[in-house]
Length: 370
Ligand code: DAH
Image (cartoon, rainbow, N blue to C red; front, side):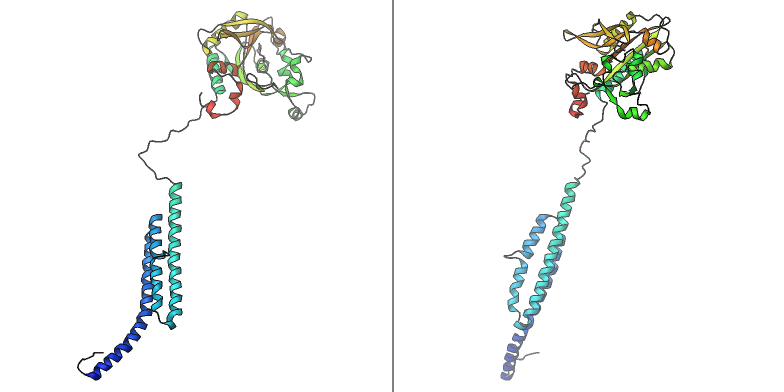
């Protein structure tokens, strides 16, 4: 409406209209402004929360829109006062909806930022300029390394490697080795007899045991090989010994056997001396002490000199004629020598290890030194 000044009637009308209009406009503006502000606030808040990429940005948006003291939602709420009474319920309802929408936008953004942070923590950023991490390469157990070295040394002395089972019968562990039934070495308390293994053979009268010495392999080789033989056998043996720094119920031995015409004790000593100087060092001295083993005659204990004292490294001797006979060899035709050395002892001497238990603790701090 165009109001023209100059006429009092017009002026009155204008005043009346103005006063009417002002009431109507105020009413109209109060509600629609309030709704418009709510819409603008919703759009701004949703945009701000969607754009927030970091916890700080999210917190800034939260304070701006939902802050308890001076947040924009709180500000807009004040406008509720200028909404006419009859429209207040609708305005209040809309306000609550908007509040809910903004809170939802805030929660969604928070969850998104938290998830991104968590995944960033578990997946560190790949930096191609960093030096690579060194790989820990596995290595052979010191006893396995020693076995390989012993095979190598003895191989150069002409001995080939033979093998035999760890579960043995009494013939190979004792009888053929000239160890009679009443010998203390056959005491069940000195051996690991295996009742289940005996039962599996179906013969209760044929006890089986974990071999207590690698001398068993001498018998197995000679039983199926005509002389000459020149072998070593390396492997595990078992005895129910009390565990201490020099004893363990399972340990390793290297057995040696050479049978041929005219083999003498001098050959035995040469081989053991060559072996000792190859493995322990050129300047090592060895000596023989008289001893007794049922399967050798004569028998000796062999020592090497180390740390100003003599240390035993195994038993040896000339193969007893009874043993040669037990495998069908003719003791008038051939003679032989045999020896049996403890592998742990040799390895301990070489690496200055003082406790045999270290080998079997499986502690990588010990094992990775070799
Ligand atoms: N078998 C013996 C032991 O375990 C070691 C041994 C001694 C082996 C003399 C031999 C030998 O071949 O001739 O104690």
